[in-house]
Image (tube, rainbow, N blue to C red; front, side, top):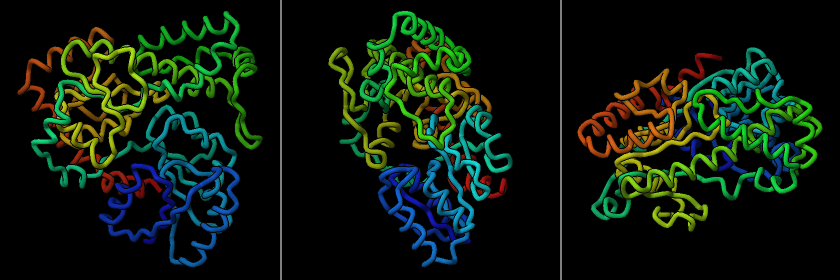
Length: 386
């Protein structure tokens, strides 16, 4: 089999290519910047020329769903596989999703349920994966231990820069803003179920959109309830949750936060800046006694890529409860999950004091990931679904 892999810079692409090669699949790269996922004619022309010059390509693949790639594949009558790592992923609302040449894989089961009817038999559920080369090549020096060693770490955005709700909140009438605040307060107490979209009706959503600087293309399905829940309220809820958690755990031990967001309001946290995906992140995960995962609230049931990254590197994972984490991993044996702020703080304190137990859980989690969730393993499952 010969695959053309459209690469745009996702951290998953390297692992996907290695996984394909491990399965004996030849993979050629198509690299080009995409100026617009829906209308980039130059990209479409270049990809079309690439496929004409490489007529032995059996299919095209990308990380995330890219409409311009789908258009080219439909024109050439060649299958297009997209493995979606983002949730929400706005391009899934494009009318191009229904093309018969598409085969779309979503890591969140609730996201899959939402979009499956848009192209029956062509949209699948598949958890994400880990690149075992990261663990194999991981080397930790004394300098690394001194630089990255800590009690508690979190690698990720606080969404202080990327929160669309913050840009519109000042324009909202009090009754809309108050309802949003109530929804966020409720959602922060619930894990494993996204109540935001279910708590919004179409009339309220239409009223909210009057104040939002958010425009949907004509060929996109206009589900304003979902857009508001995911892109506005979900990000705001995650922002408040992550800031609150980082403030709370910082008093329990040396806490390192790897982010580009400003953290001047809580100087007790060590803001270490951005962590390079390949050179730094695995070292942080391996050398932190506790690695936190605080899932973006729009990911309703699925396992975020960060969880596989942490466990695959041999790190101890303490995550909020996610239904699919509970389905695939044994809580308390391969990872640990929390169900409330008080539960989180209790478990941080406990595992900082029980080193042997923590190490055993980290080792078991890594073993499970390397046996069942490598890119080779998951790509094999993908092709068996087709």
